[in-house]
Image 1 (cartoon, rainbow, N blue to C red):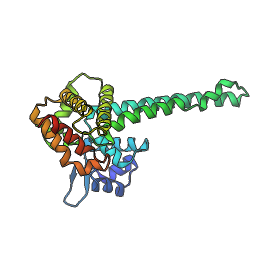
Image 2 (cartoon, helix red, strand yellow; image 1 turned 30 degrees about the vertical axis):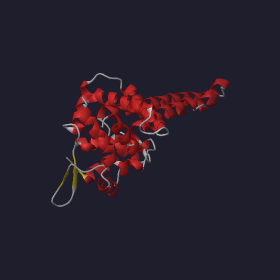
Image 3 (cartoon, rainbow, N blue to C red; image 1 turned 180 degrees about the vertical axis):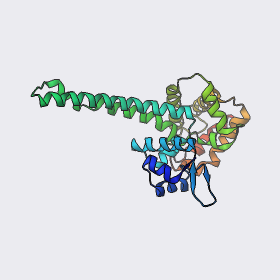
Image 4 (cartoon, rainbow, N blue to C red; image 1 turned 135 degrees about the vertical axis):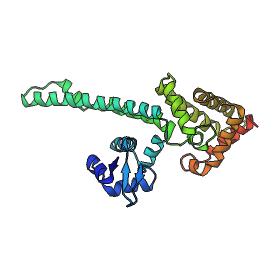
Length: 251
């Protein structure tokens, strides 16, 4: 266990900031002594690393909270994607250093102008951001995690993610396609064919992780109404629509 002072010195994060992270539920301490001092175990420090990593990438605390609420394997996939961006930046810096050395030796050719072309990195960022946003920004899948419909809740989902051999990049893309189907179906209404296709795709996704019978799926639809206020902040009207679309098929 590490004290708040030790964590502050290790990470460069002030004690006040650590306290704030606790207050907003982003990084609760592992234990609190009778004196009121916070203590952090390795799991908490690992979570702090993720928070600081995402902050370094320019993400807001609300966005980071949503990322951390996803199963660990999905978080790892997100980190893997950002690693590719970091590697691309590293490669660019190495090329820039070589060009600087050439300039210092009065050596130049037109190919060195490519050192300033950031289009590839920006394209990678946009691609990854769109995939991740589908999974996190809307909070679309949070009712499954928070509702307690499945025995074991989040733990069961995490265990499933560890034992299944899947391409998590494809899973994230699949999540995005489901969210897109529901958003597009909102134009036609919850009883439309488009809504039915979205509901079917959603249930297929859930069954990839946890066996989901009709009763459980109906409860998922009801859970969207329970979390309506929270979800409406990110995607107004979506929670009520998803609930109605599921209820139309699984009455």
